[in-house]
Amino acid sequence: MGRYLTLMRLLQIFKTKFMYSRSLNIIFFLLFLTVVCKSQTVEFPDISADRPGMSTPPSVLQPKFFQIESGYSFEKIMDENIFQENILYNSTLLRYGINKKLEIRLQADYAQMKTDSLNIKGFNPLIVGTKILISESKGILPETSFLFNLTLPYFGDRNFRPKNLAPSYYFLMQNDITKKLNVCYNIGLEYDGESRIPAEFAAICFGYNITEKISISAENYNWFSNSAKPENFVDIGIAYIIKKNLQLDISGNMNLRSIEKYYMISFGVSWRIKN
Image 1 (spheres, one colour):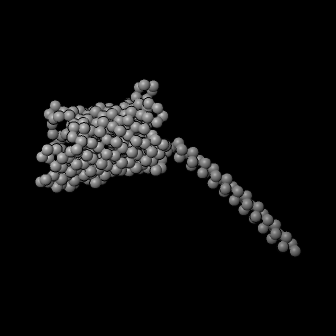
Image 2: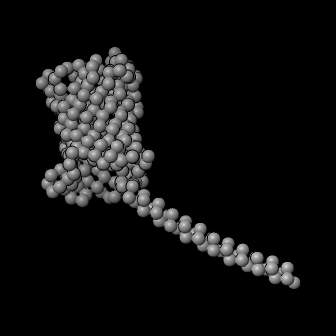
Image 3: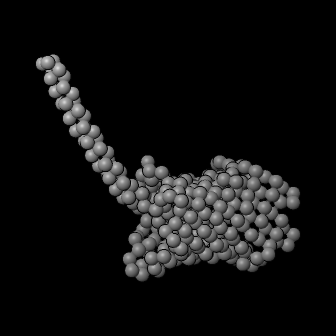
């Protein structure tokens, strides 16, 4: 009888401790979920990508975040006696946030150029760069960043590589007109690695958030050079945020000087990862 009572007592103690332990586990699990959810809210704001379009927003990637922006584009030129198709099968921009005001960048493309007499495939030269935040937006003053890119002549297909280092410099600015509408504008200088005289680049882009996940953009971008006529283009793009760290986009471009002789379409994906 004593052994039976002792056994029953042990079972009761075990049951009490088990229930207590299980309650603690549930409490700790709920606390874990709360902490994780709060940390994700803090650490994972909505993704901001340089895609789509030719203009670049001034926003710098968050510290210790890694972002992959990859896409496909098809460009067709039919100007007088010129027929040319340029295809980027995989245009990939890698971004990494160093701190709140600095990110580093690396771009690599696998391309094809087709003309009446040529059909060339290969890698474009590597482009290394950095984006530096100069100032946050304040009132009518825009958010402003400086972007530096350097095209390297040491990598890629010989048909696509420049003869010399080819730097590019841009000032990137953006004003939020309303909570849904913003305007982004860029000015810059681009060297091609051949001439000592750079081309001037200027772009203006209007973006509108239809919903929290869907945004549209319309932009005008231009190149000016002393040795050639100005090149003026427009494009329209749509971006869809699937998750806070994943975005899809599609866009189409036209040449304002010869709408019927030029077009480009592109689509891509941007994916952000916490390091």
